[in-house]
Image 1: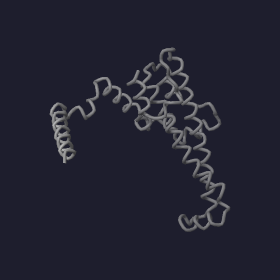
Image 2 (image 1 turned 45 degrees about the horizontal axis):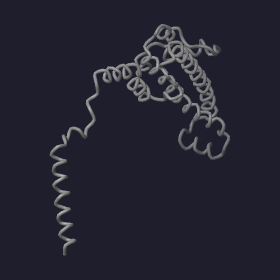
Image 3 (image 1 turned 30 degrees about the vertical axis):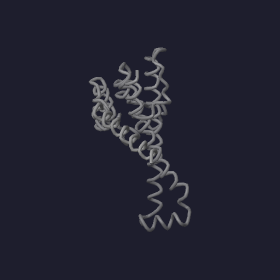
Length: 201
């Protein structure tokens, strides 16, 4: 009997303590703080720079249109003068690191395209692949294969250009780094990494 009274008293004490706790707590404490003005500026700068390729689609030498490929397909070191002019004197590390991520993303996108195209070319003699081709495409396969090979050459060249651009941006970043920066480029994989690096700096 006494033990049940003790438990009842304990429950009462606990509920009083909980009530006091909730009365003292400000419910807004459970929500994250508003981003600071600096954080908002940083996000805007990253957001602006991440659309570099979309904003510059009209420039053939940046967007790497087919006519640029036809002219420079033998140049394994091609970057594009307009691209170089955009970044050779750039000193804003937020812009440079965001462009570093842009180049990685372009390479990944092209890499996936190349994977599917080359996978088809390496298996097009396969009977089940032939059946799938007839089922879904149904045109003259030789014409399709020829077009696919041409596209693979174009995508390979584009991939190489973006790799050259990545190296160019990386060199630009490394030239501006000082010892106290403590930046490991291998850790910068996406736009959030860029934001977090500067936020924590």
